[in-house]
Length: 177
Image (cartoon, rainbow, N blue to C red; front, side, top):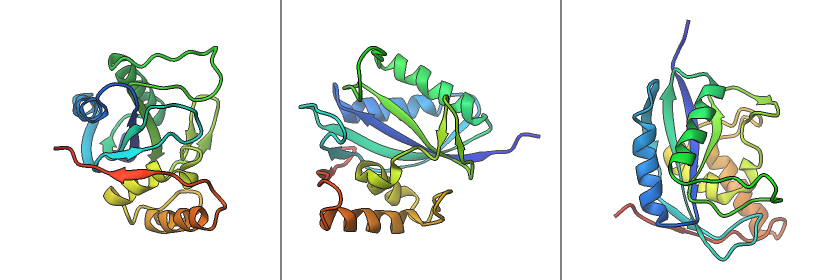
């Protein structure tokens, strides 16, 4: 028997008009059979983390409700990325500039690690561009692995950044207007 699962999706873009791309991709995601849109954060402008690029990112996080299995949801996200011009250079090392990045951050209370899919998405706890918008839409959501709320995770990350244990992450809250 299928049941509806809450999934959390990270959206990002650092090529083109990020706000427009993220808005249109979010709306398109809502047209996929078996997916119902929940809340979407405001857009956040963020400096690249873990990569060298002169292009800042527009990031957001949204919740969806789905009857799709996690792997099928991931495949839907990849199809949408391609529809919005995302190309992947498998010969390049590391992160690349991209028109659209859709990351499956959480899928209910599933924790898995396979070559195809790792849940929760790795490095969430170290990424302010994920946690800040996630804290806006799901502040009391609990991380599957740590049991901490997103609010607690944001506070811990900010503390690690302030103490110098992690590099500063530039982030500016925007609006969809």
